[in-house]
Image (cartoon, rainbow, N blue to C red):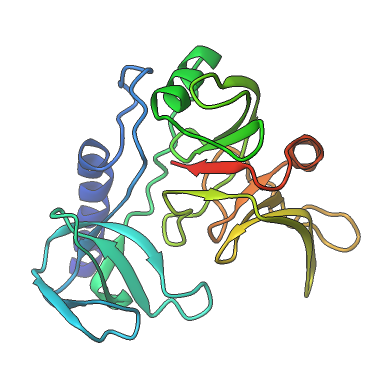
Length: 249
């Protein structure tokens, strides 16, 4: 019973405190677009290391320290965690040392096209193609822009499902490098717009008979990739060329 009470108190702490510290509150001014960060807390005092092999001492992290959870070492083993400290230092710790919030921080997408355009144009984003993609993890939306640096115009916005808190989509700027398809045991993703390091934009995993295995859209659900409805990703695949810059924010 005592363990249950402690667990419930921990959940309440994460869901009530973290939105103010790490994620934008629902009461935000809609023009303030901030990068979403997955909050976590250190369970016990541990050393932070330079790499996923847990070698190369960086610092000691005290129990109770709030950190940003970035990603596990791999979606298969998940035995080490990559985190960012409040100082900005990035290091690796044992996965057991981190409690990652399970709270769904998705907020309503009330942005206008003008808001989206202001974000990418003020950010000075460039692309090798006349297209640009921005994925808002906080709003679970993917927007396609047409134009050039400083003059991007939003032409379409789609709901998506980015990575779960425990396997988050990274916050970075990357490039759509090639188009492919994934055929795995029990499911297929086609088309797949590959980004880097195993991350991609693709349809919801579908069985070989055509049944969508996980219909979640508009909330975090994946192992880090950006999932879209089949018709939506088909549109992106048809119009957006390889080489396009992708903002994961």
